[in-house]
Length: 159
Image 1 (cartoon, rainbow, N blue to C red):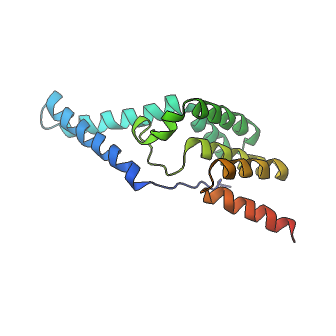
Image 2 (spheres, rainbow, N blue to C red; image 1 turned 90 degrees about the horizontal axis):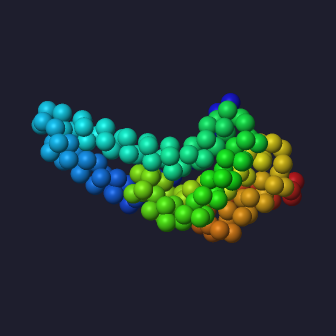
């Protein structure tokens, strides 16, 4: 069974990525001959994009892999590390569209809290899941995912 993954794109956050890609392609034409300049630029962009996520957001990436493999206890630990990292370096999370080439509308801290909650729910620990969804909603009042999850939990209690 595949785990449900929600991805929300912030199109304004994609603008710096397109600008970076354009500059990488222009640099490619400057560094190598015209026939391979665009390819060189695209490869440089992809290396930076994937590399920064694999290095800086490593715990998040590990957590996502663990969720896909239904290893929820280990995923919780990975997302807790991810949350601590992005809480300490909030500027990375804030400027994720440039630093991590991430056009996500959701911050890594919000994702970490919601993924921890989801993992607890998959382990049958509804109380802990609710606790973390509420923490996400408290820290990110506009979180549609956390708000929907809290409403679902509350409605299940009333039936």
